[in-house]
Length: 393
Image (cartoon, rainbow, N blue to C red; front, side, top):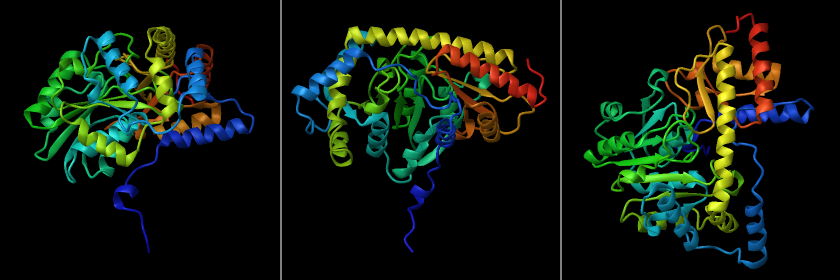
């Protein structure tokens, strides 16, 4: 009997997608659901980008582009690094990809031999470990803890390093934690990898969505052995357009481009025209204004969660998530998320999606709804805690 490959069978499903499926079914049945499970802020598409899309459809060919992306877009991304982060990046080292996930696949496929070790943070974005495993890597977890602000350090990475480790992968701002690594953190992590003739992959998908720290890029610390993943999905809000990019070290573009030719052929053409317009200063100003709105939502959610008994010693500095351990008496996070949704219509993500030693007791709240909806969600959560005979506060 034909059976799936072991590497495919080992990829775990997202609990968040199961929660979303239940939430959509409740909405279809006429119930009101407040979505705090999926990382997708509900902002409208900026009109200038819609106008670009319309013009492109009328005047541009929608055929294949070069596998590494439109030259104009690669130059626009390089100009973005220069303008915003004072970093000069050769556009030839920028590979445009189908979403940030495409960039992760290219980076890991280019670096790893079967059996090579990949250090990933736990809790962390689940696709990191799953993609690493699919391309033949051996996943090695680096446990992060709330008491240290969920931040991976060079000291911890060095202690966890094993003889076969070839890649260290970190995220800033973090998903699910919102932790932000500063320039010194990133330089120290890069030094750990370089000293071991290994690679550092920094996932900067949430770059720009920073509230209480400097907005940086790992590229400010050098480029040898460094792969930087980014996406147009989060700060730019272009989730459904499925576009991201990968910055590779000098000399790596030819092999990564060959992989792109064979794995993806080319990134989505219309999305590339829109993305180039998203990098203009006019549209970036709109995204920066949205960042301030997200900060207000974060502060509202933090204050409300603390008031009803959630411990949050280290507020998230970036992204749009609050990640926290459940208060005592609420059981495991999977059961909590399911019963909370059924009882109140508030959808959250259990921490098992993200791994780590506290996974069974942690949850992620995404502050993607409008402030009024967040207030309703907090009121429903407070009532739920009271109804379950747990004192609030």
